[in-house]
Length: 38
Image (cartoon, rainbow, N blue to C red; front, side, top):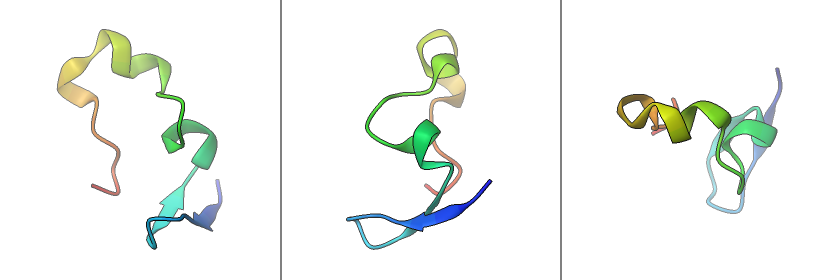
């Protein structure tokens, strides 16, 4: 787990999960589709 600076100007953990591609669980769990940084 690492934190990187995104173009939005905030720190985002695990960019491979919360980057442009949506995580796998987002498609099946609309209730938990929000990244922890939001």
